[in-house]
Amino acid sequence: MPSLRPAVPADAPILAGMRYDFRATLGPPSEGRDAFVSRCAQWMAEALASPDWRCWVALDDGGAIRGHLWLEIIPKIPNPVAEREAHAYITNVFLDPVLRGHGLGERLMATAMDWCRAERIDSVILWPTSRSRTLYERHGFAVRDDLMVANLGERHLG
Image 1 (cartoon, helix red, strand yellow):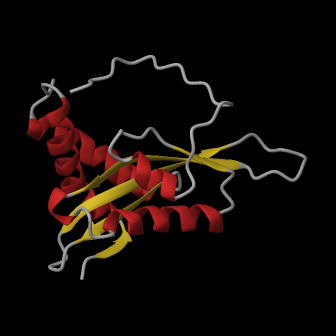
Image 2: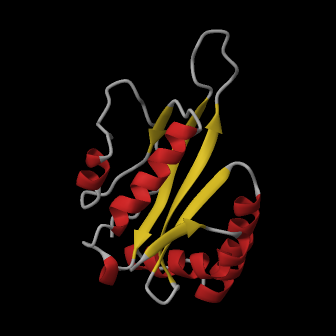
């Protein structure tokens, strides 16, 4: 049965390769796979060793990483009233297409949301794809009218 576990810095090369393989399908890569994986794996290893990031990986029956969910903790300025003092940002959610539809994505989301509740996170944000919206809605996400976003980067719509 597929399982989940927290990612560790040693997982970074595999996670970086998965990120390249997934994101390179959205448009022409501006960087070769080897160069990207090297650069991204270093970033991911450092992120996983820091207190600011969490990642959970989905393992197939043989123990190979086949999916992941990344979460960044965004501290808020201290508040003198009874208000939680951190937000979370979920990003880079991916599951191998072979394992989709078997509840593993639900388990990744439930694990991340349970962690956020236990850590007293105030709110969780993410940018869904049209395909992922229903998964996130099942975990309490909704479109809000009190959040504004200024997208300063070019987005690939591939």
